[in-house]
Length: 168
Image 1 (cartoon, rainbow, N blue to C red):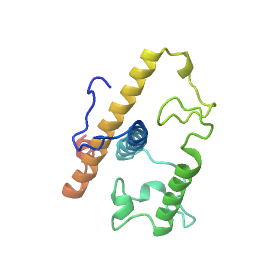
Image 2 (cartoon, helix red, strand yellow; image 1 turned 45 degrees about the vertical axis):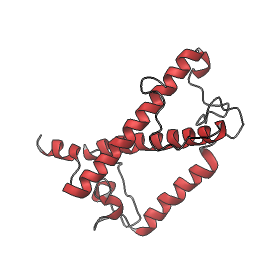
Image 3 (spheres, rainbow, N blue to C red; image 1 turned 90 degrees about the vertical axis):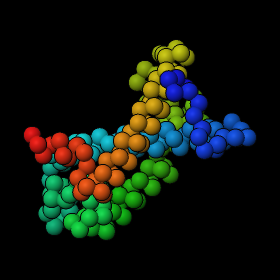
Image 4 (spheres, one colour; image 1 turned 180 degrees about the vertical axis):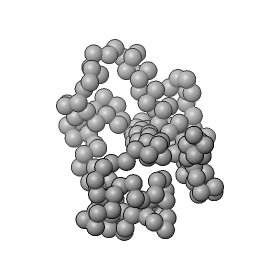
């Protein structure tokens, strides 16, 4: 899809059929969507915006835990029970919510299930293809972006956006 076109540097689609391509595209879209949320979460929490209230019954606030990957694996990380709850919630979404339930999907990754439309059906085919390409490329950029933030946080102890915020 434009502007990047077909890109398969590892040769994963050599001799692949349409079903294999659709599966890989579905996974790429899903990971792209997750990474877009993760990148936005990094920016928002590094900017000091946290949920109000307590994260647990002991009264710890959401902002009492570190930002980024340190919230999961650092010395002041959320408790193991909290991490298990996050994993269980993601598993529930994966198995029960984020899939084509009705079989009406127009393309891999279409989870509207006949309910959520937001005007998609009013677009012509050219516009739909363009918007799908935009989502795909934004997801690819977000995958690289969140990977860069996580790696920089592990190497330097602070992601790039955290450095910018410290100097203000």
